[in-house]
Length: 176
Image (spheres, helix red, strand yellow):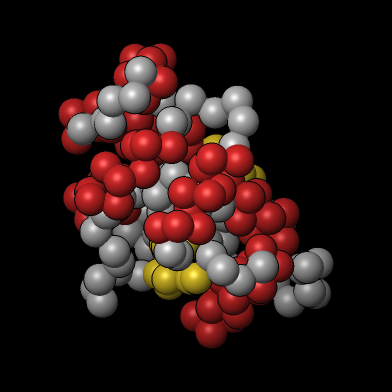
């Protein structure tokens, strides 16, 4: 997945979805393929959020507000500098995505979606992560998929990571 000699416009992306959907994996691979910086959204959670999730409690809108604002600032900074950026962030609700878009009105989203059973299996196999698998259902209940007015695409996580990244790259070419 090397970048071709074609010059691409700088795009800011959010790779979104519920826990266990592969946001970090796909986000890092997309950033590498584009030659852009990658921001792991989980690293921006305040300790109070991490503690709450570690205790098995789902986050609410208020918990997520400052976290989303911090990510919005990263996106806005990249836009101001004319740089591409890939951010992994659950971005479960339209209101969350709207807040992120305040940093860049042209922000594009990649919704990684798949069957609950597959995601639950991935979560059960994960080690050393503060998000317990039983919070999956709260994330699925909160999830508002991308609607027709939002710039982005929805991909099936049953595909291999290389296929997912290639689909994102192809969408970039279609938009250019």
